[in-house]
Length: 201
Image (cartoon, rainbow, N blue to C red; front, side, top):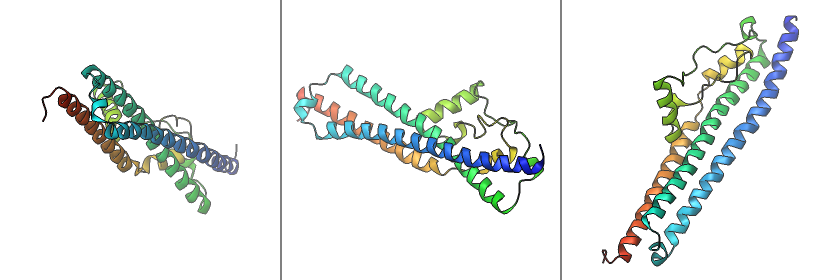
């Protein structure tokens, strides 16, 4: 295949990938925000419920509610980790399309990419980083930007790796809000139980 044909194919691939990954990014964001709305609804119910109603909850029920909350939290983290990966893909693809609108890709941009610096999740350190990123935003434990990119044009993947998504800041805000709501829920439920037992004036 001659170089002109390769350049045309790479540009078409970039457009197709950008369309697909942008939709994927938006889907992950929507799913995370939907779960966050569920957390907010639970928070609103507990904070506005009557004390007598809350006092009916037992300690095992509170523990169960905390586990449900943890499940929702992990679901949000999973969606946001994928969104962060997609954001890096979108940024790299946009950079590639912008760059190659002005100048044609170089020969090394057209070669097939081979991953060289992916995180070894099978090692203890890699597993701990991944677990940490599921609990709270930790860039070092995120999905490698070049995951699923083997065989893609190297020029596109290299630009993806250079792109630093700013989504980590919004992830920290969501994480802080989620934890704060959980603490306030648990505090109000415990105080309601204690009050019903006559231990609180």
